[in-house]
Length: 100
Image (cartoon, rainbow, N blue to C red):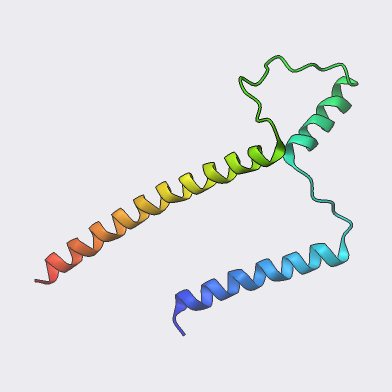
């Protein structure tokens, strides 16, 4: 096995062990950061806080909001993948030209 394979398997194993531990031995609840932030602000201000900005546009439903979030994530992944592939190809081309 290559070192990279061992490293990847080790990282996956660590995530699996952590997931099993957290889901089995703790009473942790998964919640979004927006909800946690709102709860903390309400706790600090005593519930008197009113947001100073409003959204320019709100999606008509939660499904559309999820769709837009997924599209944003996929576009970001495509851009990151493009640049990683570009620089890897550039490096590979440079190595091949040095070998000739």
